[in-house]
Length: 156
Image (cartoon, rainbow, N blue to C red; front, side, top):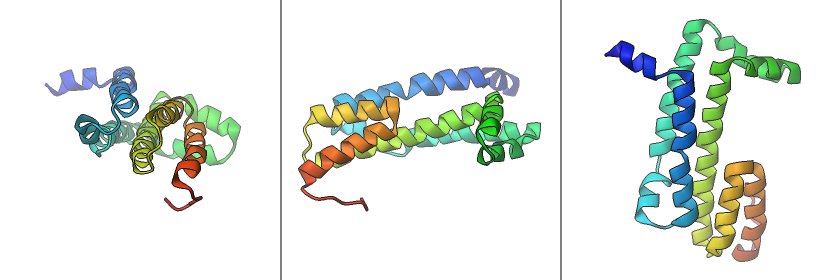
């Protein structure tokens, strides 16, 4: 049984499952941001916990391989970052990190836009931009939010 699970938990399978697995939750945020199903799945901790489980599993594998200190090279320069990304396990850990955080931000945009009554077409556009470009989607939403919230707030 354990060998079967280990044979299924390859880096490639984890990548495919995580990468394709988050898409339904992004679609919920874009198409039905205030629906109960969206609130249960996309606004909750469920999906980040699943991504974190994969993150922990891969980190465990990195530790067992003896490559745990490889991840600290990212602070030394671009060449070291490039070298670090040549390691599939480390690259996947960072991708899971990105997926979890960007989905969290997309869910925040959906909740916040409902709070300030930002039109769904604008918030959906920003959520979609966040999915594809991360920080550009957040920045665009922030500027739109200023107009609808009628204030500039750096602390929310």
